[in-house]
Length: 298
Image 1 (cartoon, rainbow, N blue to C red):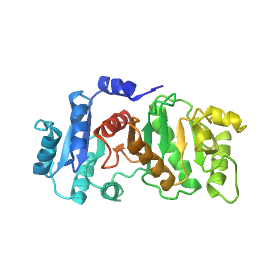
Image 2 (image 1 turned 120 degrees about the horizontal axis):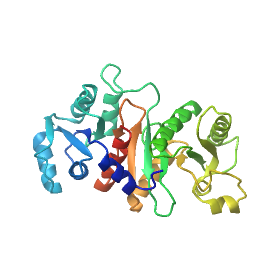
Image 3 (image 1 turned 60 degrees about the vertical axis):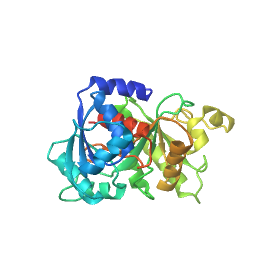
């Protein structure tokens, strides 16, 4: 089991370099991350965007992109479409969001004729490495699914399990997070949590353990479970946190991104290829870690 980003980086360095296409690569932190990954032979970058703007961003980031393939394109929509086209033409293995917005990336990915949509639900998975937790911790979904119903949560969970298993977690533990740790008929998220738990018990969601509802403290703290009398194999040892909706998940993700220095990464999974997707204002370190996570799924 991979326990931190250093181990993930070591594996990425040993494996064959992956071709990563960056949609609208006109942003300094993206270019820092891409250049670092390229210098370590982890990726072969393909930069899509306005060449002059890319060069200016590289200069401000103090990186050299002269050896990278640059494909001229202007505007968020066109850059996203061109990057997806390169994936479809087998010229790249992995898609990365640059300066373009998530909306334009997803519109290009979900295009019925020219996109990369897989057979199921797409969702965002973040990988966290808090120093106060004893292993990597995945969370979902802070970027795509706004108010998922139970059927959507099943698919979101399956996507997160795919990532967890790529990290070497054979039997991932999923904590379904809400505001409270008891089933409350007035709180639909707790009903969904109970249903997901029972589905895992009966093998409808396979090769994992799911428990919930949990308040966040129960999900990540064994002491909290002990104090509150919660008997669980998941609480305090969760590999995956499944949040009830995008608002709860996004606030949690951005709280960590801006108020801590925790190593973290962000991906869209469920498409034909991994999509390295972070907030445009995330640091170059988060973007570098996201590259490591993305290439590990190829």
